[in-house]
Image (cartoon, rainbow, N blue to C red):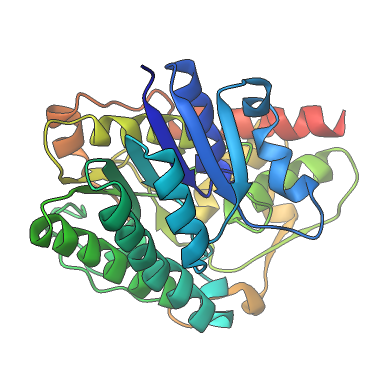
Length: 325
């Protein structure tokens, strides 16, 4: 019998790629989506996955415990991937209460539904590099043992979720694991995230559709990978012999300025002629540097990223060029 996977946040960047990856491995995939006033917003990333009859989606929400209970009870999944979240760091300052409710209490709701209805399943929690905040080891990496000192409501909410997963794993003997994923992008990344914002604007400027690009902190460094690589890691985490916590990263870091320089140069433009800084895009407390040490995942799981920073950027540039063509 095929494995059954249940994905929250299935209509997001990671959820849609994960659904496609699991379907390609003959899983039966179930997901919940939040209702939007415009239905296309729910389905746009799932266009390819919907072609497969082994995908089923229904409405649900991490804050609606009845929908979680109903799904867990009826599906009895083998694997649970909790990817749903308020995932934008700067917006977590605008909506701190909603961020905490969704990213912290929502995870607790998921764990309780899991524990009560299908405790033999394996549970993956989408944890985040933002949990480390401004804490960096002496070798300039962040790893599973690095202290967590988050600098945003988003990061704080993810620290609670990370720790409640570990608590439930030990207290109830559950197969519950954390994937501490560093920044990962793709052509499906939302338009309000900096990678898509930069690439989409650069393409529009190249085509004469836009004059300038406004950004916040140009000198924030991040460890950027491709979502396709990272959803493979999620599946590997759950198919490891025991529950554990793993950093997933490229082990290389680039600044927003580096991104602008590469993307605009790829389009035969000089970013300095078009990019301006706007204070409204700055965070209340800036996080200057993230670089993950994924040695544990590479040696224990055998995971390796297939995309580099450059091929990731190229993939996104190609997508937006084709979009405008």
